[in-house]
View 1 (cartoon, helix red, strand yellow):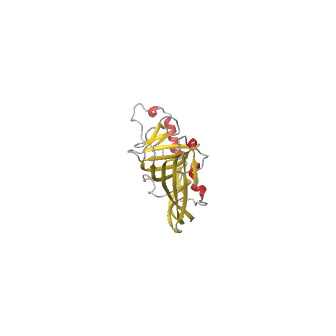
View 2 (tube, helix red, strand yellow):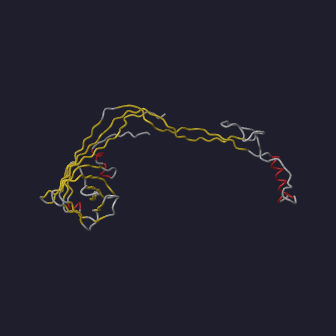
View 3 (spheres, helix red, strand yellow):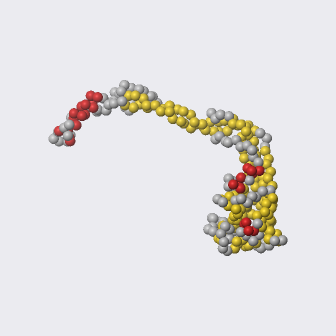
Length: 274
């Protein structure tokens, strides 16, 4: 399969989730220092995961002090950015979703206020991004290409004119062709034109013939074929480290430390597929 050459990878591309193109998934640890209360309404469960939708008012969810493995996903849905926390504070884990306006950026240093989150705490922290590139490599990879192929078949111009005339004359006698009883119809030759006397069903398999009375019908079809192409490439690994705090006034309610890593193969050259 042909791969698209990517270029100009920078901070804008690394923050693609801000415009809803990608999601960034962190794995890490949430340390809850004081009891935390989230404003939410409970949504339907997702398999073994309890989901909390924080975009609507009503009810609360509470996290008690402790250290919990926590996955955080950053993304965008419609006009809102989403921050989803899957906290392993119970079995099954609890998923909490927080939404805020799409115009609020999460950069190297960020602060999202309680009013913007719809919560009773601020979310503040840092997001550090590092990009590592491997040495350039080369080799062959599979691909597909389109190939034009002409396909012909034989089509009859017309049946035997004499046979057609005989069949038309016989049909004038009406049902049973004018004979008083079924079965009295005399045997007549098959009026269908048979260009291969003594042969059935016709020419040998795989042969194309253009017998008398027939004309070829040909069409060009595009056929997909597997192939190989020469490529030069390198691997690019993007690592993001996040350190965040949930702050209420002068109190630090919780800390989160996590990391996300993604590796892509980047083609710098690709030859023709054949």
